[in-house]
Length: 414
Picture 1 (cartoon, helix red, strand yellow):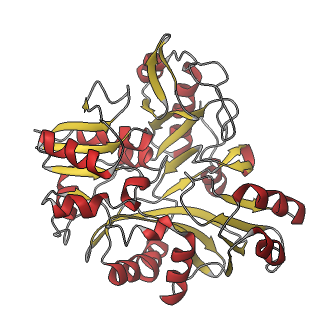
Picture 2 (tube, rainbow, N blue to C red):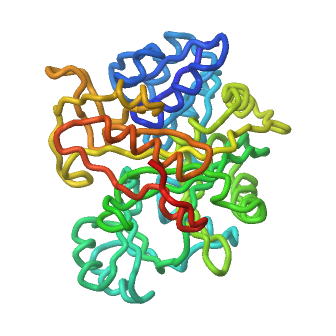
C-alpha cells in the first residue's frame, strides 16, 4: 500500500508517523520535512499547485492520498484527484468553503439552525468601525479568508478593535464573544457516515493564561475527560450530522466549539485535521488508522471504530522568538534525541537542513508530544522533553493542559 500525505508541517509529520506504523505500508510526503525523512520518502515538488500534487500522486501511483493543509483543499485538490480516479481523503472545493470563507460558514450555520455566536458581516473598514460595538466588548473579529489560524482577534475594548481593523482589512465577520471552554471536535466523514475522533483542546494565544495574539496553536492535549459522552452526542447530533447531510462532506470536519452555559456553540469550521491537535490525537490513537482512512475515501465508513489509549497525550509547541509576528530562521536545533530518549515524540513543524544541520525554518518549529497514565503525568513528560531541546530564542507556553488539571484538581507531576 502506497500512501501519500500532502503537507510539510507538524500535523503532517504526525500523520506520517502514525501511517508508517501500518503493516505493509510505504508512506510518501509531498513535500515533507526533515522529521519525516527517516520514516517516509519526501517528494520534491516542482510547485505547490493542484496539478503538481496530482502529478506527485501519479508518479508514485499512490493508493491513497491524505491532505493535511487547508490551502490545497480550498483550491480544489480533491476534485482534481477524483476526476483522475484517485482515492483521496478530504472535502471537495465547495464543501471546503466552510473553512475558506468565514462569511460562508456563518451563513451556513444560521441557515441550518446550528448554534453559533450572533454576528454581522462587513465589507470594509468603514462599515466595520460602525459595527464593532454592536455586541459589546470583548468582541471577536474574523478575516473572511484563510489566515493560517491568525485571522481572528479578540478585542477587549474599542481601541483594540479599531487597531485590529487596520491589520485585518477587507471583508470580515464581527461576532459576539462567547464565554466557556473551547473544544476541538473532529470527525472523519465519507459523505454520509461519520466516525468521531477523540476530543482535544487547542491553546491559540501565544502566552500563558490565554494572553497575547492568536497563533496557529501553541499546544494541545487529548483526554477522554474533555467531553462527556452526552456532550459529544450533542455535538454530533446538532453540528456534525447536519453539516454532513447538507454538504455531503468527506474527509475531516473540524468543529471548533465553545461549551457555553446554553450548550455547545460553533466558533469555526475547519475542513482538515487541526494543528497542533493532530499530534496528540495520533499519539493517543491505539489502532491502525489506515483502514479508516481508506474506508472514508471509498465511502464505506459505516461500522468503523477508532480505539484510544486510556491515558491522555499532550503536545507543547516550541516556537521561534517573535512568533506570530516577525521572527528569524536558521537557528541551530539540538536536543531532539535527548527528548525522545525521555519518551517524547518530537514532530517537526518548521525545520530544515542547513548550514547548522537541523535548523529553524518557521514560526512554529517543533511539537513535543508525550503521554501518561493521567493528564498530570502526560504534561510532565511533555515538558521534560521540551526542556531537553534547545535553539536560540525558543518560546513555548508553560500551561498547556492546565485547564484540564484545574477541572479535576490534579497536581502537575515532574
